[in-house]
Length: 101
Image (cartoon, rainbow, N blue to C red; front, side, top):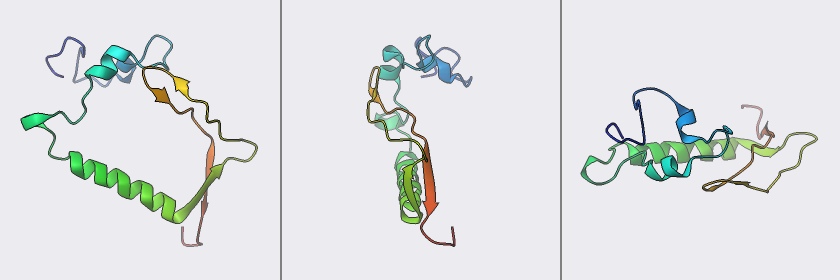
């Protein structure tokens, strides 16, 4: 990524580099070039840990909270069509399953 002409200024946080001018649709060419954990000999040693941590975080949320649509809203299952199908942002509310959370 540091030497790729696709990713200019790789040390600068610029999430907009992955979006088209509308600020929503991902740029196909940059999404296809992105490989966040790399591959081969230079693969990130922390990839497995990162995936496990994400899994544990999600499972913990599901164990302790009931997740439902926010009052007055329904879940919209129509995706955003871009380089990949993206879910639309959904207003949700988390209801603790016990009084300890």
